[in-house]
Image (cartoon, rainbow, N blue to C red; front, side, top):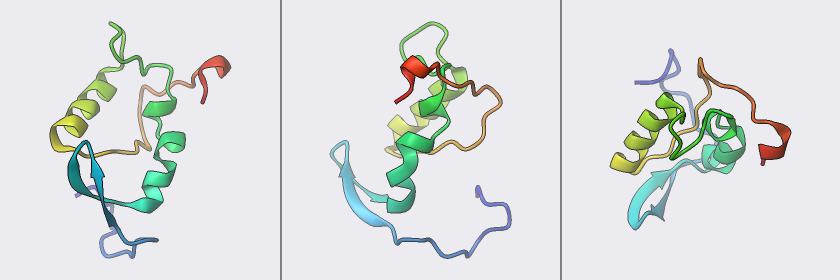
Amino acid sequence: MCGEGEAGMAMQRAPIKAVHYDKSVWVNPTTEAMRRSECLCLNCRNMKPGAADHCSIAQKLYAVCMADNVAMIITRCPLWAPKPPEQQR
């Protein structure tokens, strides 16, 4: 699906069951641990939920996340721009 010839590679840690938004889902603990700090969307100055100039790509991804109760860590984006220091986590 998303892989580029990487099918069959072993995961660092096995997925675990967890409850998110009142639903039981599978979670990859390796990527979940770094999602907030390493996701391009969550560290981009174009990420402005609720604002008129909110990133259109982030809005589409968020709609998928909410509809299907999934979480993503974005590692590539043509629109990424660093947040100013005062907005960094």
